[in-house]
Amino acid sequence: MSRTPLIAGNWKMNGTIAESEDRVASLLPRIATAEHVDVAVCVPFTALQAVVDSTRGSRLEVFAQNMHHEPSGAFTGEISAPMLTEIDVHGVVLGHSERRQLFGETDKVLQLKVPAAMDAGLTVILCVGETEDERENGDTERRLRHQVQEGLEKVPVERLGEVVVAYEPIWAIGTGQTATAEQAQDALAFVRALVADRSKEAAEHVRVLYGGSMKPDNAAELLALPDCDGGLIGGASLDVEQFVAIIDAAPR
Ligand code: PEP
Image (cartoon, rainbow, N blue to C red):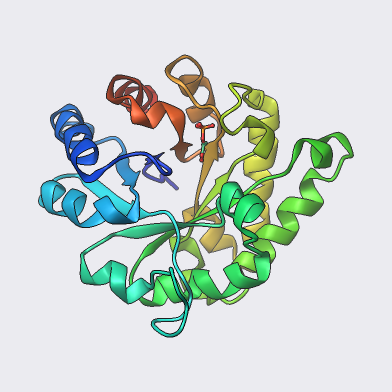
């Protein structure tokens, strides 16, 4: 089964509309021929419309970084799936560790968000990953099992293969510390095996990304791992040269 790698840049809370437009204007010509990968950028809400408009007809997909599970209602400060699809956003990152740790996002609410996004036609990148303490205490698999099973529980089996899961060890995010190739491969394969527990066919299709201080100098090794179907890139995605170098490092 060949899966097209996905390289997704998570810009986090970085980028005014003007800065975002400048960044995509530099990026677009550099990825025009990168047919070996799918490329996405996960953009702050305020810049989504502008980035969608300036990337129409290109290979670049535009993702939001969060979403509420209800389509509308009394949820001050939130954005819903129909609001994203109305402006032609392609997908959404759900359950990023910063949202879990800083904004109290739980597996229970992700259980609602994931199918709500998919029903609206958005591609979901569901983020999972263990803390440093959990890894040191031998709890990595227990944590991943909980996050993957809960997050995907309400996704019907026939749509399971459409989900993208990003394995992001929390201790590696923004720290410059990367999982070793062996640690990453073990966790990526474990995530795929969890999907296989529900459907072997879906497990063949589901894309599992690595995230956590992926940079041009470690990307080739990580992206070549048997169960690695791409990367979720934070810091390095803000620098077009570094992001393009990571895209170029993906296997052809
Ligand atoms: C992320 O935020 O998803 C991430 C992987 O960040 P960084 O690449 O900066 O570690």
